[in-house]
Figure (spheres, rainbow, N blue to C red):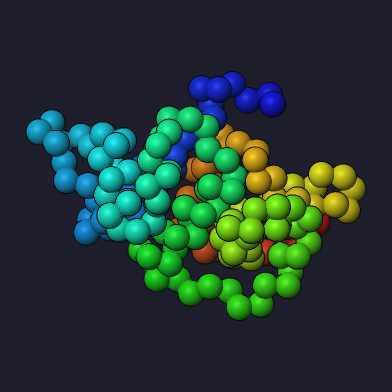
Length: 162
């Protein structure tokens, strides 16, 4: 992979980005004495709010996989923003690795169908999600913007025809 390890995003990066863009004070961690919340405090608050799992907190500074970003973003959409799931899921079947992680499949479908995360063209005409690919901090910023600004979300035709 060409990205430097320092550019790769972590769960901490994703959670903090969602908090900073969300502006939802009822879900924010309590500030410490210096009014700066630590990454672990953000993670604990996200866990209490139900959009990350205890397993997500084990290695918060390791690079995060696309499948984990999909899960966390989908849970955030449901638990915090109250955004309903897409009901027509067949367009997501273009992702040839969709069911390589059966636990993740529903989360991946939703962030893909909502235009928040895009597919990867593995070979001409063969699209995957890239479950075990990492994301950069810049890519996380784009994903988080799509969470909060639906007009920045991708249309299905754009995702199928990179």
